[in-house]
Image 1: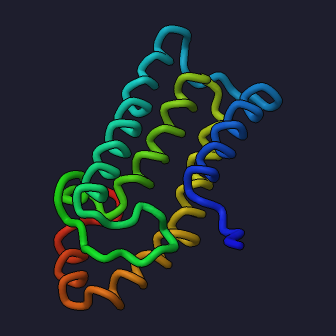
Image 2: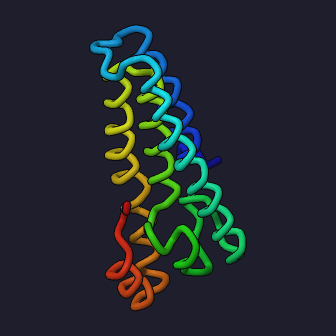
Amino acid sequence: MNTKIMPTTALLISIVLCIALHLIFPAYILIPPKWNLIGLMPLLFGIWINLAADQALNNADTTVKPYQESNTLVNNGAYRISRNPMYLGFVSILVGIAVLLRSISPYSVAVLFAVVVNQVYIKVEEKMLAEKFGDGWIKYQARVRKWI
């Protein structure tokens, strides 16, 4: 049985944590009312880039799951601007939620999520891709940034 937490599960936990922190420890209201709607921009961007990245992986007939071996090095679509567009999208969603909530405490979740994602998922995935695709990975890595 695979007990590894999937990134989408980590995102859902983080969203709940953002809301809980806002309700329990709003700390400081950072954004005035009505201006918080600007949070829709990073939220919608995060959803869009995740859908685009998923589409690119599906079109290449390779896995979306981080612990499974890829059979193709995808470097088109959303993967032209970021080596990790799905994680970029997840962080963007969390930032959007933090802006919508207006208080400062949810931003800590977005920062922590980015750090954890980098350590738990991205390092493992990039090691697997380097081993599988060698020079192709090295060239792609040199051309495309990790986040954006």
